[in-house]
Image (cartoon, rainbow, N blue to C red; front, side, top):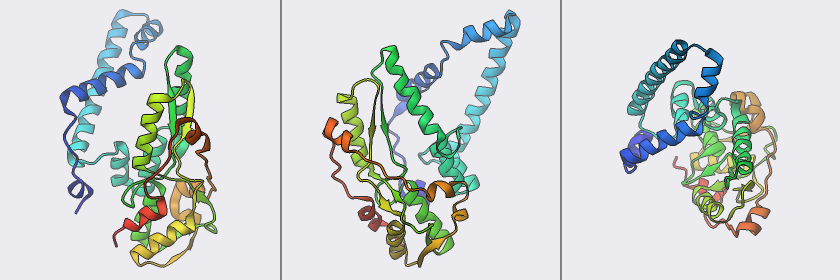
Length: 263
């Protein structure tokens, strides 16, 4: 049973939402400012119109290709899903969390850009998510460890396993997004972490027990380009977020949620 058949996507958004999303994304990337830049660079009206026509053709070709992928693989997650299907879990995770700036670099750039909008009069705020947003035992780094354990037959962890990975339940994160929309001041940033972090070897221990697999240290190279990130201690705190917005996680912790993993 595939993810698409086990958890089918609900068709609830409709044409209106789709058009609004496309329009908002197009405006958001600067389409209203770009024509003047193109015109200044090219100078000739024929070249200007040709550039837009050629660009439109390429955009249409890309849209058709993505539409075909979406029809073939009806799963949520955008390009992460397609990269994972083609190149494996490691590349898929990197694409999903890094975009064009490498495994994690895109996150920082996105937050900086959003917070910068505050200087232009917009009430922008950023909710920083940990790399494990979980629900029903799946999601993020922990979910990736589970998938690798299933494939290799070992529930492994890099180094001595003492490094900490913060996490948050998806439903607790949803509450924080609502609080940020309702209360946050412009230019503020918030940490959506339920705790400082669980040790990776403790995470691997639960995964191994649920899957009936041995738990042991494995080389950092096992995780490919994500190896250095997996081996890094990543503690975080949401003390300020809780005090300022009144946010309090109430759903299962990561270790508790991993008990939902099915052998």
